[in-house]
Image (spheres, rainbow, N blue to C red):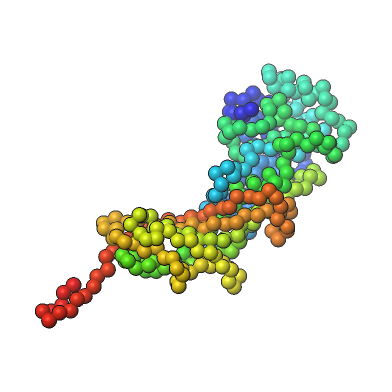
Length: 334
């Protein structure tokens, strides 16, 4: 069912300070306890309560942007369960959060009280976490089960429990990819009609890996996504070009991936000047993305696979008519 801002105020997202088990409660709604990976820009951050994000240092000095999936259906999970409380901590949380609360929160608290919070049992209470605080998106967790009891050997694992596969999707969603570090020859403001446009790299480009990990109360999970650049595509931005686009394979040289269109059979060639305007020249890199169920980017790739990633760069280019000099007995004419 859909969890929205108007959902009943059941057990909220208790934020835990370190591993001490002390909690700061918050109700699901306008104040969710979910971090939206605020640290992704610097390569490190967190999602949910205990999932940590760490990204490799980018070799390229070009601008970065969030990885865009080449598959429109390749969306990361909206919500999941994470380990949160021991039975004793959960009892304290419920009593502190809902002491004197009205319905339906009071009924939820009574339900957990009848279960005796599983005190004396081995296991942990896992709590629902959201990727962001937009609850209008569908989440498969029902409002009467914001927490679930998970014994050490779970005979029927809940499908919403966080898994390495989920972590791989969250890692990809947090990945920053470098924009294509390319330069045009001639320069973007000096392109000429009927002259092929050469595209060359002006910086390093290497694979990018991102690890999402969970290590809390004895539960240890990790997944690392590895994005490897494989192809460079350029688009002229107008139908007045032949060809209108070219795609080049990226080849790994001395520790980096590169592409140079010099000497290849495809170079965007403009057939008409841009006049007083410009053409939106677009460059994109396709990244093959794999993942491993550990913090090791060189670990064996796992299935199911992840969609390709894309990073793009767009700039306005000016195309002019080539000027020629004709010499005759009557003098010089341009």
